[in-house]
Length: 101
Image 1 (cartoon, one colour):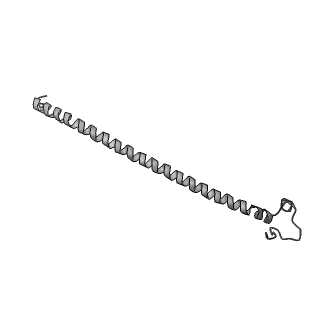
Image 2 (cartoon, helix red, strand yellow):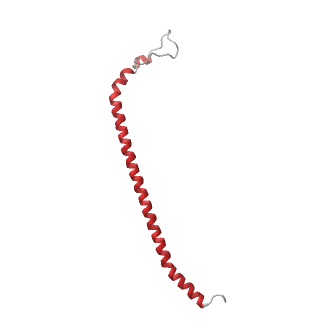
Image 3 (spheres, one colour):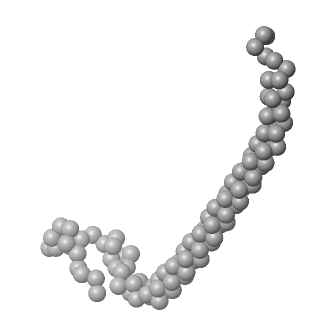
């Protein structure tokens, strides 16, 4: 312990006492800034999710409207269940169907 002098202890103590508040201030400001960044990112994600939800709802509504509009026309063009269940004619080629009108 010959290398540690009272002047060195005093200098080190003053350095710690002066640096501690500066370090604490730096750390607290850093975490406040980081918290603001995370909150901004979370808000951006919430806004993006809301926009995606609205877009999806609009697309779903448009699709439902189209299906409702074309629903009757599509049902008329589809073969009836009885036609699907009927055995194929022996004269028709295997795998060949009549075109849908």
